[in-house]
Length: 201
Image (cartoon, rainbow, N blue to C red):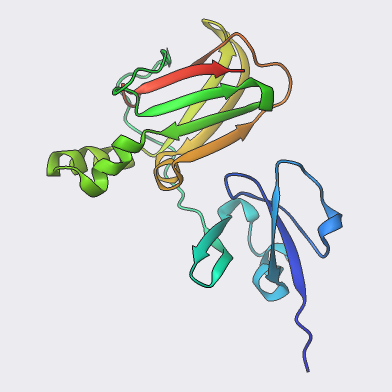
């Protein structure tokens, strides 16, 4: 009889795999959760045949309970046509206009990027024009956001990248940072007009 060997897979809020270990005590990060998988499902990562960078953990709620799966990431090309080729400061959030909100949650040292629910719902419940707008939005690919000192794009504090497809699918993405990140601005290339940025205690 073959014994089933289980491995512990640690992953962050975005589903990115951070560690794979034979026991739950082998790795600790307060920002990570853990799921268990048979050794056969993760041995490709352990042998180096697969890169954890290209995969993520998905938590699925089913009638039988919660289960986890390892799925390949949708990787977008690192190119998108922008409204201009320069970094633009993201203004404050505006009700009914902001599609992508960027919130610096200072007490948790995390940047939350969230897509407006009303915009996301256009894909399912909107008119044909609304669905076309969402389709165009999903083609934008990868974007980078730069957190700087207030109104000073030359004093960079933190940068991160995300794909529009992943943001649309998950609704929210989280990016942890270290150090002080207060009294800040956010800059990005202007893919759309509907960005909003704010700091939150």
